[in-house]
Length: 205
Image 1 (cartoon, helix red, strand yellow):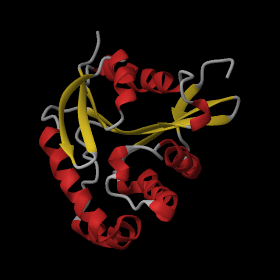
Image 2 (cartoon, one colour):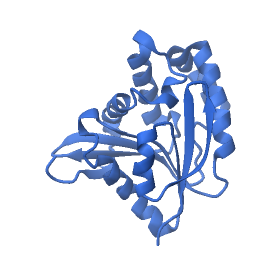
Image 3 (cartoon, helix red, strand yellow):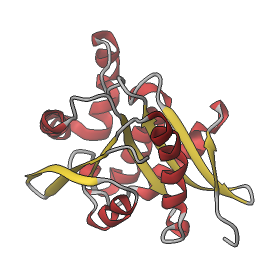
C-alpha cells in the first residue's frame, strides 16, 4: 500500500464486502468468540452474524464505513450516531431474529450474549455520543495505518460537532491505537475467558 487508504461511506451494494472484511478481522476477537459458536462452525457463524450486522441488526440507521486503496477493500467499520443504541430492536424484530441467533450461537451462546449485553449496558455513557460498534481491518492490511485512517475519517466530523465517541474492545493490542486517537479507558469487567474494556473520547478542539 503506497498511498494512504481512502475512507468513505459504503454503498448499499457493498454490504457483502464489509461483512467479509469484518468476518476475517474478528477471527480471534474474544468478545465474539465468547458467545458465537466455535470449532467447525466458527467461521460460518461469524460470517452469518456480520451479514446481519451490516444490514440492520446493529441498528437500522447504522453508518457503514469502508477503507480502500487502489480499489482494494482494506477495512470496515460500523458507527452509530448519538441517540442510536446498538441492538436496540423492536420486540417483533427480536423475535424474528431468534432463529438466526440460535444458528450462530446455540442456547449456551445466546445466554452468554445476554449476560454480556447486560454488563456492557451498565458502562454505556449517559451523555449523547457516537458509538464505534465494530472496526476491522483485513488481515493482509493490518499494521499499515488503515485503522488510524478510518478513525481519523470518522472522528474529524465528531470533533467539529463537539460530539464524544465511545467503543468497547476485548483486544489488548487495539487499546494503544484507540488511545493515540484520544480514547481513554472508562470501564471494564471480566467474564470467564473474557476481559472487556470500554473507552470514551472527548471531542478535540
